[in-house]
Image (cartoon, rainbow, N blue to C red):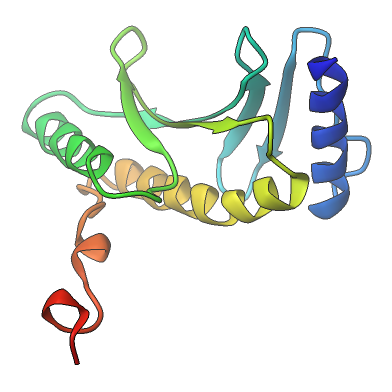
Length: 154
């Protein structure tokens, strides 16, 4: 039931983002390559078909002080208020910083997913570029900018 729903969601997403014949493969994954950004987006359902798992591998994090600073900034970003468009993780087995999220499948439409990806993908790309240039990505500075005055009073 949900696998058909997942296939329908992915197929409709493909139509919305102009990727014809987008579908879930026999292993349950949909991989969308973004060569201009230098990464591939992985989409799959969790084992209960309750959530869509969204995953980007962003790149190697060099050892030493740089890694500490990047991981510190990533942890800080993970505690920003919602919506934060992804969570950062570190895979120590391959030294990769990753961006991932879980979206509830029950009420997720292809249009909602496409809209979500317009925030998620640029966030991943910005961090990937920072890693490639050995700079610490500024993940919390943008969120700290507030509009209005204290308590929303003007």
